[in-house]
Every structure is written in C-alpha cells, then in structure tokens.
Length: 267
Image (cartoon, rainbow, N blue to C red; front, side, top):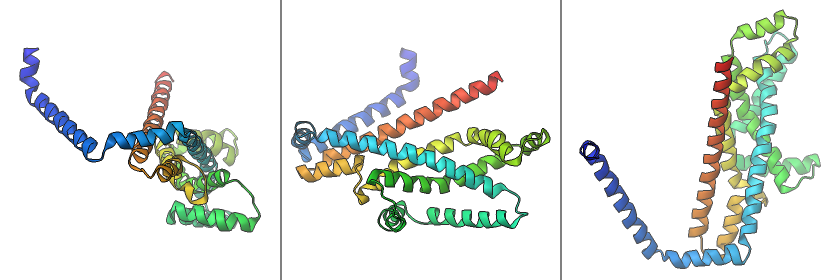
C-alpha cells in the first residue's frame, strides 16, 4: 500500500482536487439556481401530473423512428451501393447511377429539418399519401439514412476482396446473387461500427420530429418545461436519457463486433 501511494501520489492528489472542485461547483449550482425548488416543480409535473407518460411515449417513438429508419436506409443504401459499383457499360446502368447520385446529393446536401418539412407538408400531400406524424418521420428518416448508408455500403463493398465476386461468378452464380449473398454480407461485417454510428446519429436527429407534431423525447420535455415554466431540470434529464441511449447502442455494437471476431477465429 505504501509503495502504491509513493508511486501514484501525484495521480491521487489530482483526483482529490478534481473531486473537490466538482463538489464545490455542484454546491454552487445547487445554491445559486435553487435546485431543490426546481426539482420539486419538475417532480410534481413529471409524476403527479403524469408527465412521465409523455416521456415514455416519446422514448418509444424515438426508438421506433430510429430503428425502422435504419432498416429502410439499409435496404435503400444497399441497392444504391450495388448500382453504383456496377460497370457502366450499358446506358440503363449509367442512367440509374445518375439518379442515385442526384438522390444522394439531395439528402446529403440539405438539413434533415428541411427534408422533414418538405416531405411532410409538401411531398406527401402532393402524392396523396396519408400517414401519421410518426410514420411520416420513419419514411423521411429512412430516405435520409439510405443516402448516407449507400456511401458507407459502397466503401464496404470496395473493401471486399474482388476475388470473392470472381469466385462466385466462376461457380455459376448470377451477378446480382453474387453481390447480395456473397459480397454484401462481408461488406456489412466490415462496416458494422459505421452502421452503429449511423444508428446513433438517427437517435439524435429524431429530436427535430417535433416540427411536424410528432412526440419524441425532446418534444416531451419541451412540453414539460412549457407547462411548469421550468426548463432546467427537464432539459438535464432529457440530456441524460440521450446519453444512456447512445451508450447502450455503443455497447450493443461492441458486443456484436466481439461475437463476429470470435466467429472469425473459430473459422
């Protein structure tokens, strides 16, 4: 113990100083901003006035939009990536690649809020499509995610050894089957961490769905603050929930990476 203290006394001193400063800062914030009163107001509206029900609904919608949006994005992004890596010998392929490039340029070149407003208030009514606010957000977020995943997937496809495609074609598989059953699964394994980041981005971007009246975590806590005229505690709790969600997703991605690494070692 004495040897440990002699070796790490500087580290221990720094930790003590940081903890002391944090304690002083917390006490200052607690006293200056009347934290106890703010917490009581928040608790009254959150529990006694059933504010937690809105938060639970918002949390459910946030996860729902992000998960389904990622699923739609995976389908669209994979198809676009496959089209982009096709040899441009035929005019039809070149036309398809041009359309895909325009699609990707639009969704990557405009903010998600603009896409949400254009899609919900202009495009869907013009097409005569009637969807709820949440399902409209799922569709628009899926289209947005597809543009980003297409570039991610294209990089993953290019990272796969070209010999894999050649071997699949050599045994008589068509090009489309070779891509979707041989190359794409290997590409997905290579880009798994990046797909995890895309899912995290979708979770955070759902904070704008309140622009079209959909209920999410951010909208739930904004309503909580508007009703109680107290925003400090609701917004701190909102930030904490987002941090927990992101940390949980990152943990799941790392777990999947470890399992894939173990399966590769066994093979």
